[in-house]
Image 1 (tube, rainbow, N blue to C red):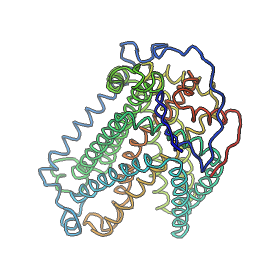
Image 2: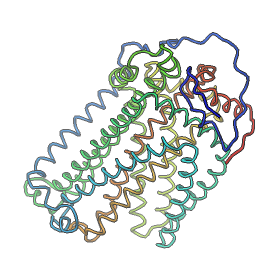
Image 3: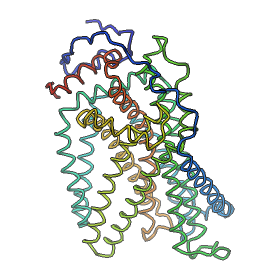
Amino acid sequence: MEHVQHKPYPGPTPNYGSYGGYIPEQPAPPPAYDQKSPYEGERFKPNRTINDPLFLIFFVLQLLGYAALSGIVLNPWSSANGLGGGIGKSGGQSGTAVTVNRSTVYLLLLVTAAALLLSTLYLMLTRAFTRMIMHITLVLTIMLNIGICVYYWITKYWSGAIIFTVFALLAIFSYFSFRSRIPLASLLLQVVMDVSKHHKSVYFVAFVALLMQAALAVWYVFTTIATYNQYTPGNPNCAKNSCSSGKVAGLIFYETFSFLWTSQVVKNVAIATLAGGPFGAWYYFGPHEMGEMPMHPTTSAFGRASTLSLGSIAFGSLIVTLLELIKMLLNMIRNNANADGHPVEACLACCAACFIGCIESLVEWFNRYAYIEIALYGKPYIAAAKDTWRLFKDRGIDALVNDSLVGMTLTWGAYAVGIICSLFAYLYLRFTSPSYNVDGSYTAPVLLFAFLIGTLCSLTLSSAIEAGVSTIFVGLGEDPQVLAIRAPELFGVSFMADNDCKYPVY
């Protein structure tokens, strides 16, 4: 049977709508109605005012402070040739044994390259497959959690074993509970992928954001290594500087804070650019063929996100950054308590870190919708957050479960990339045996940096897809009948889900 691609809307293509031979029953075509203007409520035409200027100033000042600190520590470090060291086994053993040296830089640069490769591969797989990627990623999640759980039980790391046992059980139960929603969520992903196929700017923005994240990661790697070199007690530079472990810890904390906040801002600017550009323009104006879409919507959206709305984006990003720092501190407390033989304290710290992590995930999920409101209407962060909460109440949590499933699938993919990057770093340390890590004291920080780099790179790419999914839900809340024109198959399956209709699950 020959499939015909309808002209008024780009996707999904007919093959995307088949579930093992099952074609979802669609409601009758909606009657003619007065479609709202795409520019209603100053949509795509925000006021030319800078929102949340205090947070914009704070963000710029902390970034300038980070740049200044980086210059201070990198200058003597580069003059000292990075305290020696190189790539491979011979290079790792040739550097100083006092603190991390240039071999660690090479390692983390290799981790960054691996993160770029794995993140790109994950994007290609997500583009090539839709429904299958959800099953694969969720099963991979279960396998990873079970593997970590078994490892912790074998090594008698009791607090971690208990927590990851809970994670493994939750992963198994969530797979079966979300299984009935996979057809709708996969079709939603297919629509976003098909729209992306017609708007190459989606991939351009995602890759530019990814390259910026990689550059930030490289900058962060060099700066932290140079900070260890400059202020760790016992190294040659202490003759000229006051060195102490407290100073190293404080500077690394500030550098990590700046890196996380800046990375969050870069990622969220990309989300706002995609929501206010290709995805928002497709939903409210239709595809290019209809002739109603403005010229260069992606460029216009980026201009708004990087100037007038940058303070609002920095505001929301700061909240997530602070939660991430709290979680990292709790994990450090857990590791120290476990090393000192205090399992109760370690278990409490682990539970607290998990609780903060859940709050962080909810805030980040909520913020994504707020950034879409910011991108479409140019609202300040607080006003966008209030409208987002009203959207959640109006549309109901059930409609957003599908978005959560898509986000969870992509997030677990980023988690897998981070784990693989950490595994690569661990194997590299074991193989090269660098002189500074004879007793294994630097293994945990290096693995943490590797996981952070890999996860952030993958999350940046997946955020492009999540931006499209979330933009469609915002459009559903404001003008749902438009979806019947843009993607009738998705509208039909969504209609069935809203009316508790059953469809087969494979």
